[in-house]
Length: 443
Image 1: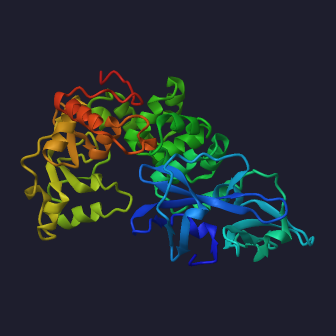
Image 2: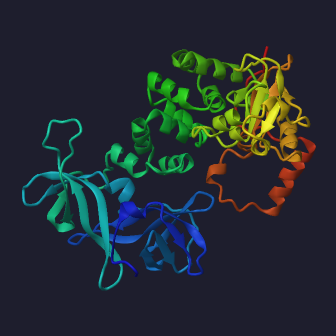
């Protein structure tokens, strides 16, 4: 091995390669088993491979750990990981536990775990990086940290008890929303709800948008009405509408009443449309400007860090007002076209004359064909008065077309399924996404 001692928290997210240098996946946790008189023994790594599948890689298959990467023998069993009795995940279950020093000097909390290669082969926990309780009354003070050997402490909690939710959240702070969602779903149900309850509103909203609707409902209903409304305020209106549609009608209305009025109005508006129409798929938060806006102003709006990439691919130009439903829709300007013109150029002169908007009752199949036929990332949606009411983005269509369990799918689609999907798009016989809302359309 290229390293004899590593800290587990630093392994999270490290890339795993095979001997040929091909990427296998990323480390998500380290699995250990407790021993009676010796430190816990490392039995393997939990690795996330393409398709969001988490698999077990025996530590015996690891040939090198170092420089932010791990090399394996290339022989990996792709069967989905299932934790067995007696096995403990270091990041998900050990970090944050309370330990007591055997010398009577007090207790501390585990913040990281060091694993070390054994002379006879294999790996085991060697040291703990722990933090003692703070001694100052200051809100910003922290307790002292120290390294300690496993033999010098004992766990105060019962075996198998999870760490504080705050510690786990800190460990996963750099995960993308989809990875955070996958990590939460990998936890036991009660643990998942505990961690979700401690996440900031915006972070939890991002994760919920990446979860199956059944888990969304389960988490949201455990938050309490006020907190649930705050989280819904942070979600994209179309995702919030889909989620509220899965709740009992009385609870949904109650949450809408608690939401910010502007956000609630967007959600109520989307709930009036059927799920298999452009109105049911669209989002009501595109970039909207006047025809007099300049290229420089348009590019500045696209640069917003909180803007989804699909929404930043084009800017909608309308007459006032500039909130959906807007004044008359004039057209769209693609960001690549803006890059070809000087900063002072007016966007009203750069409209895509070949792109026609769809109406809110256009079928999802027709929207899909338009996006595919013209290589578009988004398509504008107008009402009967040609006012812009939203845009349908490619990710909205994909979320509609994919099966409910796509997040846990292995990604090994066979030729038959591809042919069936191609036939459905050609004939327009796209099956309804069973998890979508089932409104009756606008009255």
